[in-house]
Image (cartoon, rainbow, N blue to C red; front, top):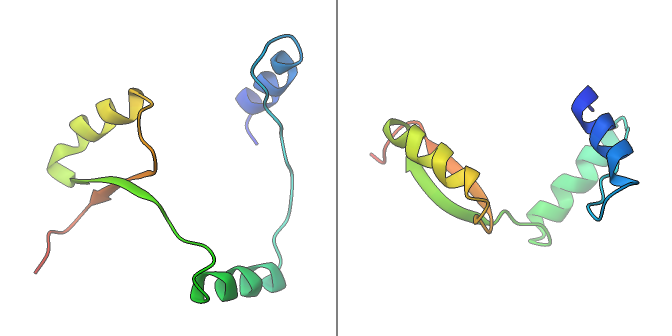
Length: 80
């Protein structure tokens, strides 16, 4: 958590937006369990768009529109 997230959590008590700060420490058992879920197909990533590294400014502008339904991916190296 950052100071900003603590502040947002505090302010959420006075607004409609809700924010929670969660502190945790992962263990190897947690990571093994997560790996098993991914391998079983029970957890998957939703990718909204893929931008080339040369399109980083466009990708950033798109992320600021808050219209992404999934993750925005930056392709560092093209296919092949």
